[in-house]
Image (spheres, rainbow, N blue to C red):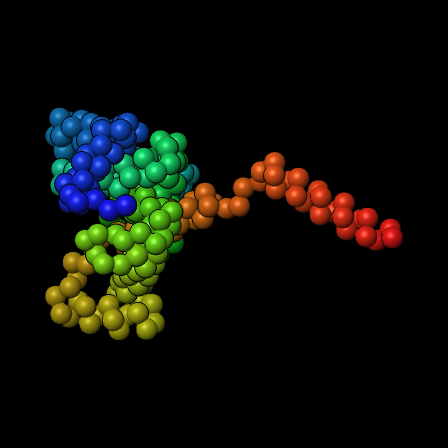
Length: 254
């Protein structure tokens, strides 16, 4: 069956998904509510807010000194309203599709997994010299829900790009890992040449983004998707397995 009002039908469906995505709206309200609180107390560069960032933002020094909670809490802080707003919008638009495909529990699990996965990716791959900025932001959770969507719908076309979900998900993971490794501050042989070339051609701003975090969050989303798609044990399957074993046992006794 095809629809004669394709664009309008898609718009209505998307709006309906947004209206019926309470979990995603709760995440958006949390992100924006925290940003309102940060702004009300003077912003991230003033006290007492800066002490919140030092306590809750992610750094190697913090985690290695025992502040394990930073692997999760960093996701709720942002550098400014643009940062918070874009992440909130991304969570809503992508997360709503997953919430309507599956249920709210899937989104409730995917975003924290992406935050933690992004934190681990940052600790493993991002430069960590003294004076490195704190990692903040929900982008690890955002990339996780995007890769989860491409994993659950590998054959779907991910408009506006004319590619399948599987190709888009793989491309994002490869691109984020490559950009993380190309950071000249890491000095990874081979990737360093490409990183220096990018800096020489005015693309140093690419390395100010959290590519290692994005890769870690995306990998967490992919693993979660594969876990959701794993073969499930059902009563009919158990019955078939029992009948097969009984038939093999009977054949051996003949």
